[in-house]
Length: 435
Image (cartoon, rainbow, N blue to C red; front, top):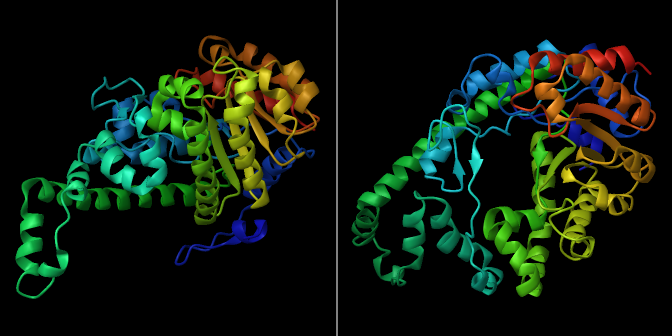
């Protein structure tokens, strides 16, 4: 699908969207910055938000996750209040009900296992053991359903048990006399009934959530706010390290079973590309958000980065570019040691959102390669003053304003950011960022 077709594709039955002058101006501004062209003004766009808009409106983190209508309303109001140049996409804060229904073990959330005003927490662990590499590589789907699902979800345990039971002669029971009793007895088991009831409720909850997100998306666009991205993906290495082996397990695997780790990275990499393209087509958005979790300096040496991380990250980025999409890696942690690798990427095709970086080295190394998104320190946003925020925005504009710049904090708007400091981001670009 071409870039123009992807952006113009209309959902069947959806109201016709006629972009307003305000929408077009914001979109052109953001697009120009992303492609390292000269916009009319430096845009200010939060890459992601979590609990900032709800917190400043007195909504607990638990309520934010159990009442997504309140969360999206708060995001709408924050976008209007601070007059951002793009609206934050729904998704970074997961709804609590699906997590509850599935009995998810990989996440702890406010109102569930943790206090109401804590952020949700990823529970890292070895959900796949080192000795199971061969089994997963031989049958990824079989391993997932039989082994992985019951380790990450209490609700899905019966599915795993059914698939691991001794095979039955289904042909013998597949007739009008036997089939009703055979299936009925299987389904009538209390745990299976519970699974089916939760599955139906999950379907209802998901439909409600999808309706809320569609309404929010259409409303924000009607109010004149585009979205910088909607698709999200992870590198193969991060998929393995985050969700299967854990950081400890993956770091040991680099030394103990490097070939098997590389084989699993090779298995995952095409999935990360194809899933991103499918999501972009479904959402009619070109921007793809790529949070990078293990690639920063301090996690591994440059030699290890070259062997285990950079090949799958580079393949993902180039695969998205080939599909007409805009990769937006969130370079979490200090990526100063990795700048030489980022410099290999094609010019004006990638938007790098920086967390911790030597700005002078970034300007010298990738200043003519990619748009720079970020990175007013979270410490200033949370504990500083509006004047300090404005000073740092001005420093960013002075350094990167001529080569593609979008203003934000380090990893989006921090949950604990001061309201006046968030507003200072917007005020500063209007004071210093007119080009």
